[in-house]
Image 1: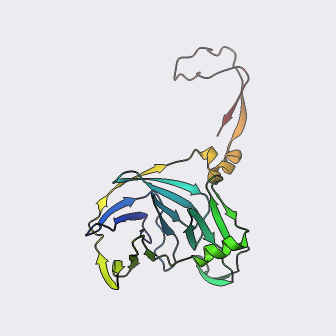
Image 2: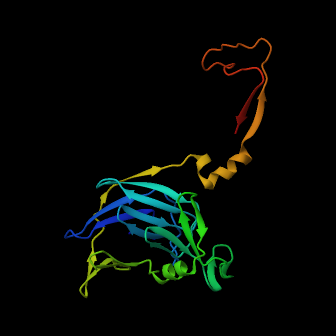
Image 3: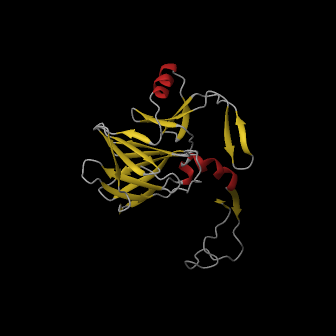
Length: 237
């Protein structure tokens, strides 16, 4: 379960009574606390997926009190879903009114693509063209604030907090006394990350380094002439 605005994920052990709650502060931005759902969390056997408007992150449980966080897709959107271990982002099939920070309410036309899938190999969204897959994934879409676990227990979030419904009985789960865990951010190299790789060609330039007459060919480490060489090709950023 994730906070609507703050980058905080709660891991709840539902089979313990009372449920054991652990809190993880993730290295993600704070979202504007509006009425729109700007990111969704999808539970998996070993952690969860977090789908935002601009990217997809994978959170993997590493022991009882630690998780790893890695960006696996440099693209996102809402709504989204997790089907058979794959993350999908839904496109809008009709025109709609949306709230824009600069212009207020604006009309946004329907998307040209009905469904995208997150491709971890390329770290980007790929269009889904199979009609049966599009139909099945969209059919299995759900609300972002309601989920049913493997035991058939329904979990909800709302103004009263976190709710658990079992056999028609609804109880409030106390998450205020959660134990704090550790989140480790797994960072990609800039040249391997699609979100930044294209920028490197624009900010990297070649340069010639010409050997100056009388320069020391064996300078002291850290000295002002260290690294001089005759006609060497290098790169500076």
